[in-house]
Image (cartoon, rainbow, N blue to C red):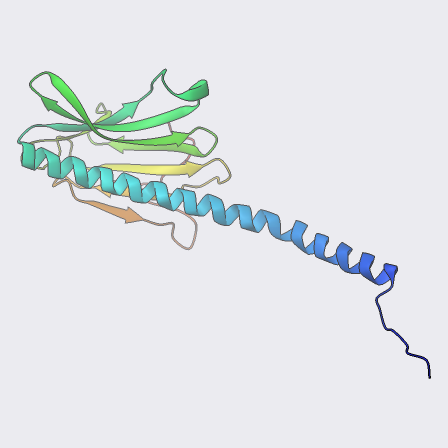
Length: 181
């Protein structure tokens, strides 16, 4: 009696490999989207922690602490954007924290009241110099903001996510846009 061996033909193996490669190719953009979302949420968490740190350090140290844009030539390839928190201790500013954003990941925007302010300044009491402020992040792959943080006069921050229409409203009630400077 003859033993018949069963095996896959070359054609069956090639069809299976083709199907696997098509499914993989279709799922790659979705996986990239999840990675971008995770990086954006990580940045939001770091910014919230920096705001809390700045407010707490102002109260503990009894000095003003400022959060501002910080461009530096130290950055590799010049494509880094930084936000830093400084403690103004007797004309010797101390960097308390720094968050870095690569330009290809997106841009961080902010709006303060009054409009001429371009930094978040926390007094030694923990309150802010400006009335309210909003900062938001726009990813390079999104038209609308990915997230926002609203800071009130008392220096307390809260995170905001897009609504069902993919819009985020600032502390002034106006929708935030990624084309603002």
